[in-house]
Structures are given as C-alpha cells and as structure tokens.
Length: 165
Image (cartoon, rainbow, N blue to C red; front, side, top):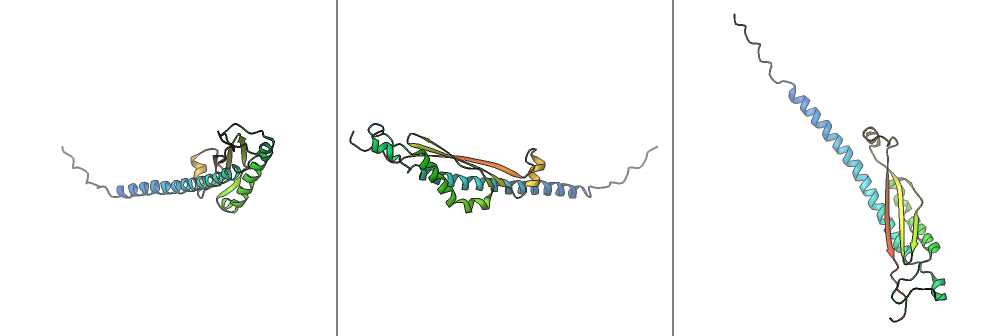
C-alpha cells in the first residue's frame, strides 16, 4: 500500500536565520575595525611624537667635548650630550602631551639612548579602545580593554666635526 507523501513545508524561515548570522558577523567586523583603527592612529601619533623628540634630541651637541677637543676625526658626527638630549626629549613630549592624552589612557616615561652622534627614543603607552569589552571576550589577557603600543625613533646629529679633511 502506498502512503501519501508529506506536504512540502518549503524553506520559510531559513533566509531569516542566514541574514541574522551575516548581520552578526558584519557587526563584529565593524567593531573590530573601529578598534584596530584606533590603535593604528594612536601608533601613528606616538610615532610622530617620537620622531619629533629624536630630532630635537639630535641637536643636543656636547659642547664640553667640543671645547676640550675630545671629538672624533674629520667628518665624524659631533658627540651628543646624553643629559641634554634626555631633557629635550621630555620637553618635546611635554609639548605634545595634550594631544597624546586624548588618545592614550596612560603613557610610559620616555627612554632615551645616546650613542655617538645618534639618539634613539622609545615611547610606549596603553590605548583604550572603544569596544574594549568585545576585545576582552575575544583575547584573553585584555580584561581592561587596553592595548599596548610602543614605537622607537632614531636621529643622527646633522652636524659633523669642523675642519678640513
């Protein structure tokens, strides 16, 4: 004996589930994109300040070494004063601190290294991302919603030892 086939129920409701799923994925991508953009722009701002600080510190020529004649040979870079370089880095950072405070939740003290005629500045800080609670769910260890950003910039003294070669 043949049994009748069940009536076709159709695909009603299947498209709604698909739209809800794609909307959730698109929303998550937008949230992550906003957070990544915030971190990227914060890193660019910090990099700009580090470049500015390194260039300012590269102007801190060690006058004592020049007057004592303790400078390198012909055409070498003039020696830099480490203490004065560090002070110029902090001064440059103070000039831009108002802009950085809008972007960063906290800034670490700058690290300045002077070697010969080159100064290297390292700046770092924590950025509060707009959707930090989503970041905390996706990445363990980011419960506070902060992302660490660090940059390093170097500059050489533009001046060379005076005298003919």
